[in-house]
Length: 146
Image (cartoon, rainbow, N blue to C red; front, side, top):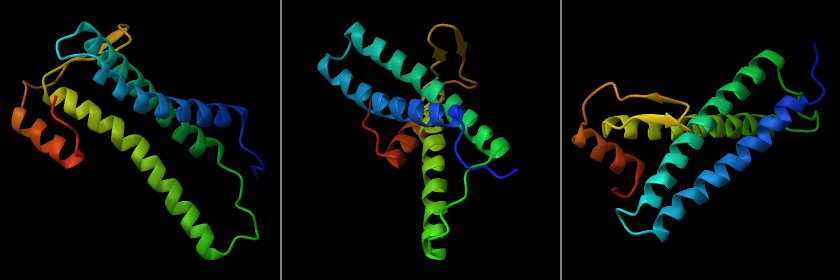
């Protein structure tokens, strides 16, 4: 089967994921409006974790749909170098869309915290807090200390 256009589901996932990425990025700055210990900071991180898990699920769904349905062919006017660059950029974007939420999951679990998805369900940490690994991972990802 030759795919000539992206399906409505693929287009919807594309824009929903785009909005989630921008929203999550902006949400991280919302914490700065409140002092340490303020309950709103905890609410912001609760939302950040929940939306981050939603992002991870939607990216996995998008990848699955891409594998099952396929994607339209690139224009025949593109050179082999442009085609290669296009594939590399797409691969890089998918890698980032998976890596960033997975690093967030790892940081949360290394702190010994439980992941919660909008209060609907929780995923407890599999191990006690491991501060040294959390610090190393934060340095690797260049995240500020909590």
